[in-house]
Length: 415
Image 1 (cartoon, rainbow, N blue to C red):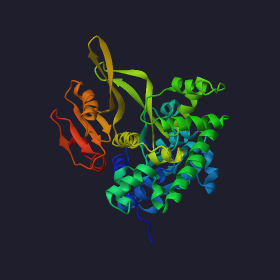
Image 2: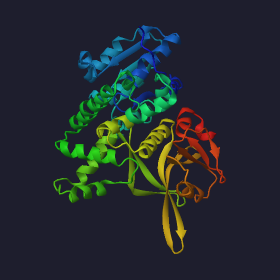
Image 3: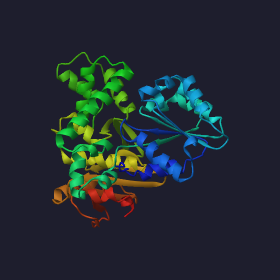
Image 4: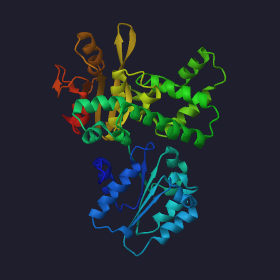
């Protein structure tokens, strides 16, 4: 029986519009989020449906042991060269290119061949470092891939949208989670993935010798999703717990390693009225909420924080730059800072978004609307709630929308 393909049309369309643009298409994202699957079968099927035959599609998975010799840059270059059969366009699809030493030079060589259109994947942000930027001089084109969004997950889930939501907020959107049948299988899969893939990769890649510090740091970040923190605050926690052999620089380095692996994301604080970044503290979110939950053995299930993390990931997936907003107001002779969960920007578009389980009580409604009402500009303001409502507007013109409607409707920001 043929395996059902999860459609990831947003990403496919990004690849289609970049075909033949003379740039290296660099597909990045956390390991096991579907980058390889996007290239093959999704993009390969598109190429074949467009009339490209097999001999003009050159595929290589550098994670496979059988292809280990192609980690040598000369072997890789020779392999691709040997697969070029004529002057027509060849599509080169290489998985996990960062495993190749000096891969920048190899890819740069491909750029000089007019009949090669090159697509590579990588699971570490450092392979978009200054080295590759210098080599390519602006000739690399990044496409960031995330775990399944709720919309993608729900389209493949065997159940209604409410059941899909309960599953998603618990086990997240790593594509293979859909193949696990029982709660035990799902939790074991995520825990094993975290330990044997992400953590091991971070330790090996960065020669970490303080596994226990990395473990405790990950747990702290997982527990503080949706809360402001910074390396100094984390360092103080270690000191207060009597752990004195951890330096602030170690914490900073380990957080950078987690960011490099795409396991977590950092949201900076932005002064909306002052139009400037504030600096620390920041918020950290996990690329997949199921991985975060598994890390904490599914013990800390605060739905408000999980919702906030899911909304953040959705906004990134839609292509927005996302910050944590700060709105300063004056109360008498004192200044007070109010928080807007997300300030989202793309070109000349901007949205202010609050995440709330509900705003049924007047006090809670005031807490969520007050920052928005004090911003003082005309950009759209939205509150996303857990309640299963389509949408309505309050007296101040703020859009109130249910979380499932927000996530399932690709145009929800412009309703």
